[in-house]
Image (cartoon, rainbow, N blue to C red; front, side, top):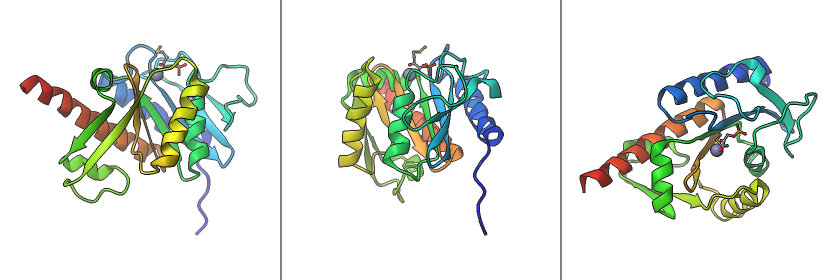
Length: 205
Ligand SMILES: CSCCC(=O)C(=O)COP(=O)(O)O
Ligand SMILES: [Zn+2]
């Protein structure tokens, strides 16, 4: 059976749904966050810069190549487009990438150079993990307004550690991805849940 490539309306719908869910959870305040999906080996659909991610419509997306150049529009793509390009260029199996600005990922990444997650059942939603009895270290990168430089740092890390399950930019937010938008969304939900647990367990100490 041949699989047909997902269409712009289908991918927009999936990304709009992710935005509504993330906004309801408080993970994309104001215009924070950005979302994308692979359209083809060379193209992606990505949110335009400055949209409210809880109120996205199909008009808030644009098509860009994997260098980040918008195609057929003068709208400006997300300020962080090159971080999405890095993921799609790094691994042709990546089909969706989602970025959140939660309280938990912001606070933990201001304190730690990596966020250690151990013993959680939800670890099994991360690539290659089959048991709760596992330890995952989510890398934290220093924030940088030079997104090309930040993308190069992420890329160097992912080439060294291809099992990276997601990453956090310090004081800024989480990037997670998957083969589809749905899988990327589950990974964001799993990581944000575990970050929240880590944050609250610090309050219990
Ligand atoms: C308004 S939050 C600062 C920019 C940011 O971190 C973000 O995620 C949203 O930027 P975009 O250009 O994608 O709207
Ligand atoms: Zn951001």
